[in-house]
Image (cartoon, rainbow, N blue to C red; front, side):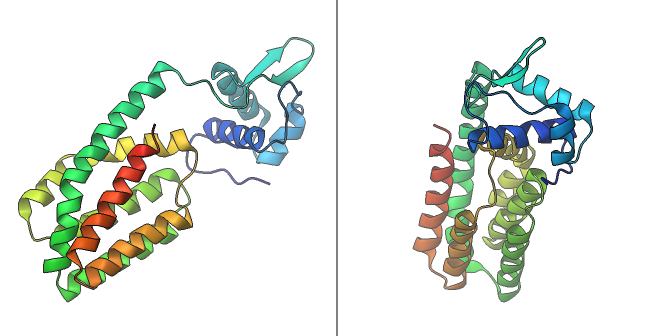
Length: 222
């Protein structure tokens, strides 16, 4: 049974159904099971399933046919202009992060204190374990990157980072919802390598890894 929590249940149920469609559980043109079957599978009520189906119908994935049931009409939601614009906004935020965090990572490798190194390591571990929701994971990710920026001992970089944190948080949550995936082991390993570079006082590697990570995020939007 899929466990749903934190985000609105109908939205989570819609994403769970979409994941099963993407996974091939129901083929294009196939009829979905009824509400009485889907509801206990997802651990929600029938009204939540109805709302989830309405959401996916609105996204062009499902279609309700009166007297026949609900059918899969697309394996992926068609991209609309709203998604295109969100991607552009997210890309702008990532570019701003590159401007701040690449230099901050290099400076942190040069200037971090033992106490700051311990704080960076703790933040990386929190990022590893906090994956139960997109919001929680994004907050842990921001805390990690702020610990690096703080260790750069440059108050202007810290102020810049803090000034666009609310916008960055919103953009990162939107990006992860577009991808329907977050907190992978590969992603965590990239952050662990940044930690190692800072611990080794390897300024070039710290900057390079931070840049590569952020540019990979940006390219994933294209």
